[in-house]
Length: 202
Image (cartoon, rainbow, N blue to C red; front, side, top):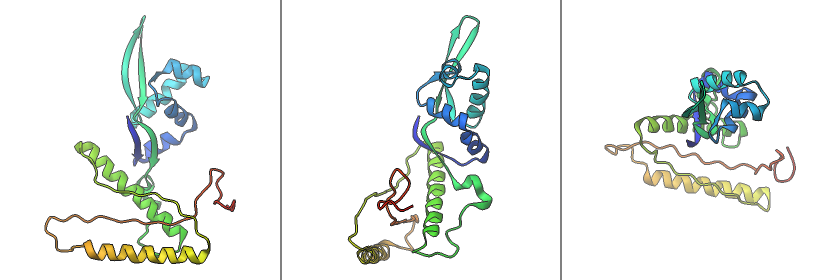
C-alpha cells in the first residue's frame, strides 16, 4: 500500500467520489471482506460487493487473500493507498492553465500552479511506479508570522530575489544530458481547520 496515490483516470475519479465508495476506501486502509464491511456500513453484502468491484476495476483496491468458508470463497480486499489525490488530468478539458495570464499576486493563478504541480508530480509517480524507480524531488513546508503587510511584502520580494539568483546561478541551458526541473514557490495565509485564515476571516 502506498502512502498516497494520484488518480488520473476520470472514471476512477468518479468512482472514488461516490460517498459510499469513499467510505469503503477509508475502511479498507486495513484489509477487510465484503461481509465485514457490510456489517460496518449497515448495507447488504451484495451491495457492498457491487461497490468493491467498481473500486477494484479502477485499481483503487486490491485483493490481499481469499479465504474458503464452507461453500463460499471470501475475498479480503485492501485499498491501494492510504489516501488519494485527484489529478487535474482527470478533468483534462477544463484543467487550469497556469501559462495563461501569470500573476504572482493572484490567488487563482497560485491555484492553477498548484494544480499543475499535482498533475506533474502525479504523472512522475505513476511513471516511476511502473519503472520501479524513485522520483528525485525536494519540498519544504514552513510557516512564518508577519508583523505587518509591509513585512510580508518585503519577505516576498527578498524570497523572489533569492530564488532568481539561485536559478540563474545553477541553470545551464546547454548542459549535455541535463534535465530540466520545475521550481514552485508559494506564499499564502495559513488556513485553520475551520476553513478561515488565522485571523478567522474566510
